[in-house]
Image 1 (cartoon, rainbow, N blue to C red):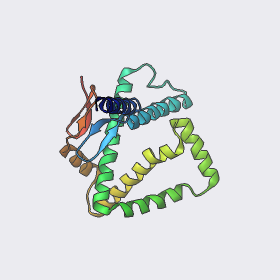
Image 2: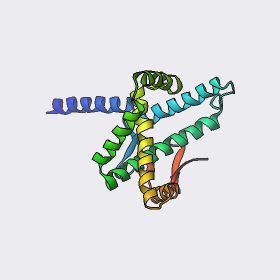
Image 3: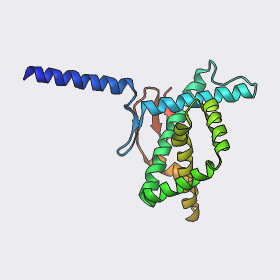
Image 4: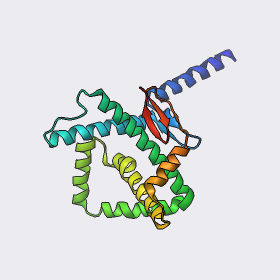
Length: 193
């Protein structure tokens, strides 16, 4: 009996170590959604890469080079955007249903991928600027933007300003931020001083 318990404990410990090492743990969570460290780190890295590439292409100095304030602000903005994406996704599914939203997303993506040559150059541009595979970029950047546009359109039809509405929804939330240098206040991620 003791041998079985020890074997189970060792296996469970190994699984926990693997999940932690791979970043499969939450860094921000609410009662019905969460953001994993893995996703956050991937998007943060691609955002930093974008700013560095954009600065090198425009022959200006990159704001990310050696500026801890810029890197900290980028962390804050990245987490804030990921939380915003989760909120929009949840509200769209509640109000419009997942099937309708998926149909609109497929239509918009089909418009983006209409020609093979365009897709190849888009894949290369995404890889160069963001250092992400196109599928990941599409899933984490393009689709959330499409969802935001869908929700913005739905609210516009009701005469509601999207930005004001989003600020109100975000300020009513109280997600738990599990990072030592960031916290949630008044509907946005803030830096601890």
